[in-house]
Image 1 (tube, rainbow, N blue to C red):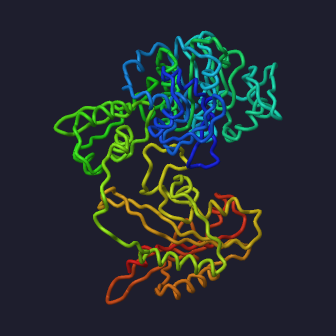
Image 2 (tube, rainbow, N blue to C red; image 1 turned 180 degrees about the vertical axis):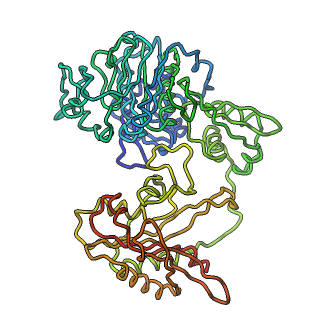
Image 3 (tube, rainbow, N blue to C red; image 1 turned 45 degrees about the horizontal axis):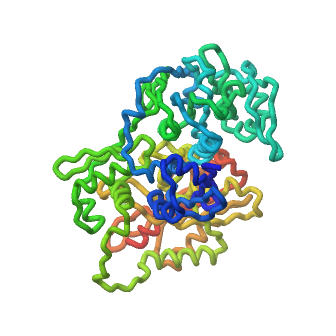
Length: 580
């Protein structure tokens, strides 16, 4: 088995690979001891061994290309990635209908000729397809992948939006009660949603669509109903098939392009000659109306040689830096001790110079760096801000609130549209793996609202709070952002009101030793006349400072979140109180 992923620990994905398959890709045999010495290159370690199966735990969740045996082999083999072997002249086309812009707007694809797949390799391809879509693709919502026998397809391929009742085909088998289910009769797309196991599992993705995405070739032969299921006639790759067509559809173009690149690299590593497809859109995308896929992002960053030396604490030769980066798959150009680094097409995780320097250090080997003795002796202690945080937490728990811990990454939908706000200035993630985690929150209130939205079955009253980080843009800072510690609290029950939560804020201010005033404001997230800013200061002729907000959530906002009982919230900045 190859490419099986377990997310029991979300920070430590585990894959199960065939040792023989890995050795075949590496073109050499490995002892287990040698393999264990090589796995730090992928931040991995062997957890269990059973015959030919190795369970490998990976410590990096930002590299979807490593969630398959081919990706691990690429890192270990230490050969430069040759783009000229990857991006040929496109020979086939995929045509995209205009209606898909509001349904499932993006697609990419390629053909791999002369692929050599034995039973283990075929299984690895199918499972890499499934696991990329389920993990990186957020359960097929952001991306879904289809693979086909290219010999059965006549190009161009048409990516259409169709009425669910107008198109029928025989779908691939599904899974029912742990056993395969054969579907030997033709079903229309609505019937597939209602009857097929994959339709029942993933149909929610299209629940708001009046038309469904559909792929067919020049002859009108059905290929697939993305992101649900392929056609049994054309969408089933079997042992012995050497020519493969792969397509990826989705809602986020960067994720679609990266998934295409990863699968293309995998098939190239298995002997395939990769021929890109030209995707022609009837609307404008981030990369234009005509895109050749696989797509070379050409993401680049410039790093001075001295920056490598400063961070790693040792003198280095420019040639050594270049050689190790090339082995990691980067393309490099050097001028005046400045190294320009271009990421390989199967990676889109480089956000900072430190990421590249870390890759160099891993490839060179951490054991190659000479350790130094500590030059200073220091005693650690809790910062004053942490003391305030601990005291605040104790006070909130003492007042009967339950603490939640949520992610600082969220979606712009949660921050703005669900809160009745126009999209504002916020810190965004450039290469987000999912729209759900695409921005850094500038408020904790949406996080509490998200918890409350799924807590309707819990006994009322609901009293929850969170002390955590928010991030706001700050042009004066080195990284153009500022991180603050905020406290937010929420009360929900049939009679929840402004005065109730106001009394808790009074108690909190008394025990933390700060005085505040409420300034009446108008805010789209709150009921008019029942919201105010929390103001502190006005000492020694200093002006009042806004540190937060208290109010009753507007009924329309409750409806946006699907919350049935009234909600009152406050949020204040612990960082600002502390600095005052």
